[in-house]
Image 1 (tube, rainbow, N blue to C red):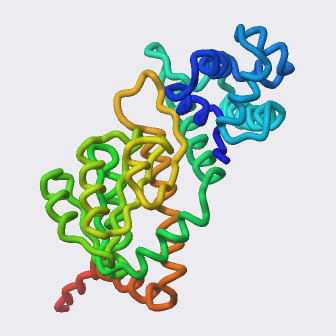
Image 2: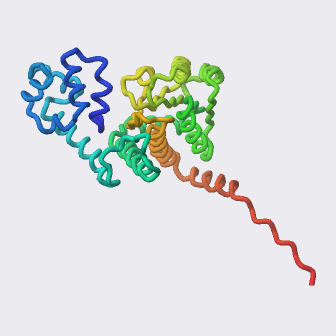
Image 3: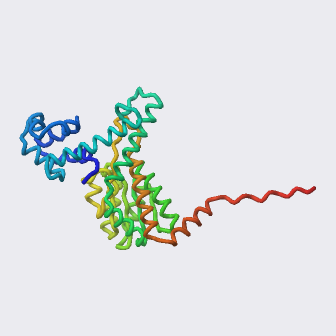
Length: 294
């Protein structure tokens, strides 16, 4: 089950009936209502029936309203804990915020993204990807804009342990290389929304060529997720006052770190030697001091 039930509710809105959508929108507007209200009271507030509320909970994967309430309470408590940690009433950034307020809000958002991603991690899916990377002839990494930075980070990590891995921010080159892959290869695509056209196209081409297609996204029902063989979900909410990907990038990087450590574990002892060699090569040697003639 999704560790962030509010993200799950948010993603479900487009596929719900009108009555169920009212329930979802009411919950998103004030999640504490679910904690405080019995099912009949919430139904009245949403101008719908008890059965509609129950059906809404089941459509999210819960056994019923009671299980939904518990999940919402857990999510709300985690969010409140982040706000309390930084003495905040809200983590939403306002254009008038001073530097220290911005720093506190961003820290709360990014810590929250890491925690939710860790709590919602699908260990079976991650282990499948890690083992596939270890066995792969070649690994392609796809991502545009901020997600390209995450792909580059994984590229550097895998290169250090001797993996054959490439990433190109050029979408045309990405599709070209994707078309040359086969059953011994792995393609990992990064997109917060899961709807980046260039990234989706590259993953589809790699999958059709026979590679294992992996999607790293925050939207489990996105086009990218539906095109993948394996989905690794991140959990991040971007501030409305958003100049660039922030929390989403942090969540992706956290997941990449977990994946890389698992790859290293599966590769075993020889990887330690590779890591030490690449570390030593990156550290400049001290130049010998010229002798002083007395």
